[in-house]
Length: 160
Image 1: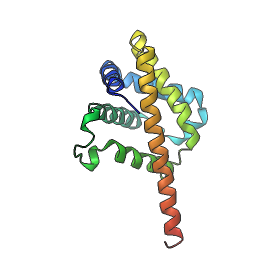
Image 2: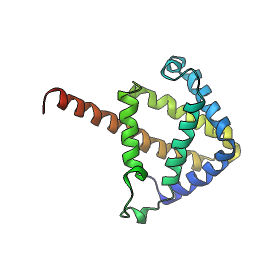
Image 3: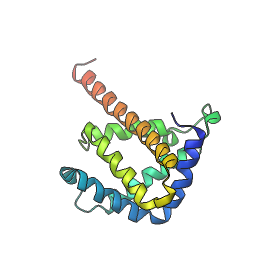
Image 4: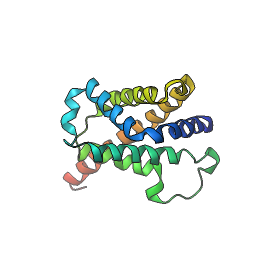
């Protein structure tokens, strides 16, 4: 799980990414397609909107990091609930976009490479470890959403 210190590291490092967000999105997708050229076909020809979606999703995730551990009982609107949003995103990635589960590792690699390029010396081992923990939580939750979607579809198919 993420500690409050991890959350602070993520929020503070993201503030350094915000001014270069379009460049970071370019770097991310360039690196992802270098690692996995076959993934290019999973995305639209024009990537501008996709890059904006990527940045907006990271902004949402990082904004959620402002919630400290003692606030876990606070009421959150469903559209602001990180867990619900990420579960739904995992289901969409699986069912609508047909993103393979094995893609999570190279996506993580591309993300960490991008942060290293964009943050330079500010991407310390401590910051990297916090981002790795965050990515692992997000990826695991997305996979849960994908699996829940498959179970739901299977139940509907069998009339249950």
